[in-house]
Length: 387
Image 1 (cartoon, rainbow, N blue to C red):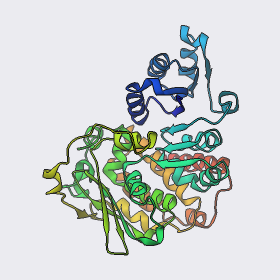
Image 2 (image 1 turned 90 degrees about the vertical axis):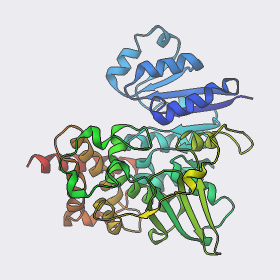
Image 3 (image 1 turned 90 degrees about the horizontal axis):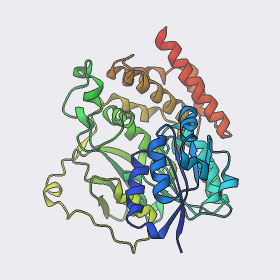
Image 4 (image 1 turned 180 degrees about the horizontal axis):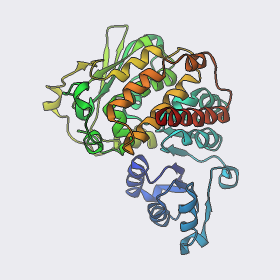
């Protein structure tokens, strides 16, 4: 019997990787739904290839353009995610959510009801709304698998092991393009230099997050929430080769080190198939293993890591503020309105404002409150930058 699946964000890097995996095994899959924001041409190619009958195109201009295509006459195309109950008559087998940004939170929470398994590659959804996601996962008995290479590696390491056995979890970071440069020398770096990641081919936003190291701050928050452990059991270490994705040290003296190719194909493949399915991967790289080159993260070089000391242990609006602030500052940098070094400087300064500290004690009750806070913070930053 074919696996019935949905891919939210199918035209992004994660979505395309999943599509490439399924292409080689088409007879075993039926794609019920695909979605994209702007890239309607790529979405149409995917839909025609797999004969997909339901599409979501969020961007109104792209939605209007795709509706003019001949194929559009044969299928259903929606402009939002408000029609899941009309699309899914019964629970599907698997959903991949690779929508980027906080706009991925609402569809993540709402599709859980309609899927047996959900793989999430959306940091913002987990950081800002994990309690809401977890509530639905438990309510509808939906299996969850994290797809970020670090969290997938931790998840894989902890199979069959109780969290009380964990002494420390180390999340590895490549250090990005400026690993061997001091922070004060980055004042004049341009967008091309910032987004030129040494190991991964990624979009401009995530590449910038890697260069500042905020992506690792986010990953620490994600790990705390997903695995329900305290911040003092989580640490960031630099590993320029990006070959080791996580290290888990247990209190029985044993340590697990998870290694895989520098490719998102590995965690995506394993989120889709059972452990019996085989993937063709590269041979163990002894050269890399003999030169792992681990280093502790330098706070002078990556000052944004100081934010970890500000984070409350309880779930609060502060995580949403952090995500929203970073999104807006990175957007300003990518539009040449602020310098690269301003991202770290302004975040550390703004997050210490008394007016924001109160939100550490307030927990969001629903999706609408999170989205409202996101809009407010982005607007406030726009005003402060202009001022």
